[in-house]
Image: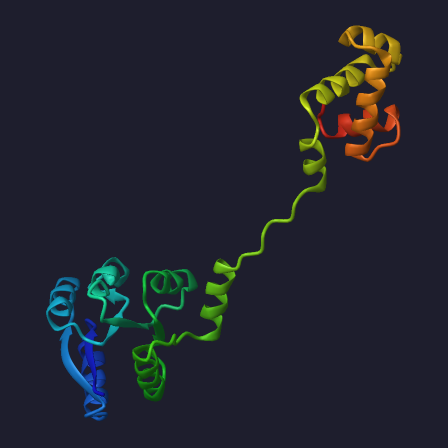
Length: 218
């Protein structure tokens, strides 16, 4: 099967070299057209529907990322980025927009040809550092849960009120605190038992220290 290739690059020397490279691989590879501006690239791609585009990232000072979705919208064409840009964020953005290969302009001709064939066959052609950057974004480690935040979140509104009374009471007896809350001492003790368990503290002193440290009840 012949792979139909379109070139998009605004450097005449680069275009000339790529044309000769593709012609040397005939009939396995065939050049169907080339473009040097974003406008030429989008209109020519829509008309030719090439199998693979070798796409320069920088066209006349504008980024090819802006036209990449349009180039791939026909459902046939796949893109291999030719780049002198080593910025990982830019290359990652290109892959997220649909590019399936990234080849440095300094790469050996064998690598360029291999990238075209692999991408045409439905595979990715990315260097290891770019692949790791992509995987790092896709499989980003989940932030570690804060155990103290989880404990505090488990408190009920009433339990927070009790903690507030203890912090503000500064040593007041249970009986006095219960009267302020209009509850019995037994109910207050039940609240305190639940609070101690949730916050992993042993007594009112530890609760006071914990509450002031975490701005509870202030």
